[in-house]
Length: 91
Image (cartoon, rainbow, N blue to C red; front, side, top):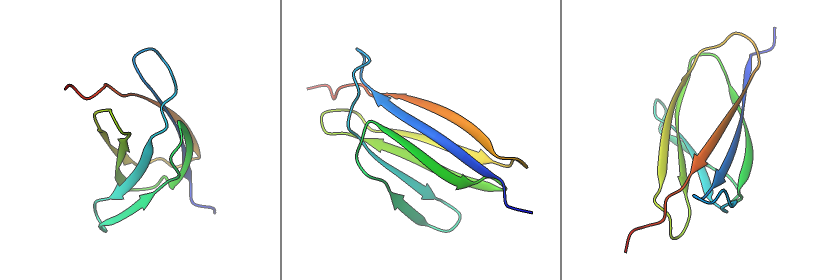
């Protein structure tokens, strides 16, 4: 049997719904590994879905960073969409 996968589609935008090129990284807290992804406004991430926990980090120049934790334990392939709204850094 093939291990189930989580397909996480991340899209990043600002208040006006404009796409924002952002650095997306995933930190696997249990093993201390960090995976960096290409800077872009959308990203399709593919993870093992059984007993997996991670923190998604999103950062872009001029915007406040965002972190979102996940604990995933599913038994079939799953698609998930995450829309990230970045707020500008206050001067």
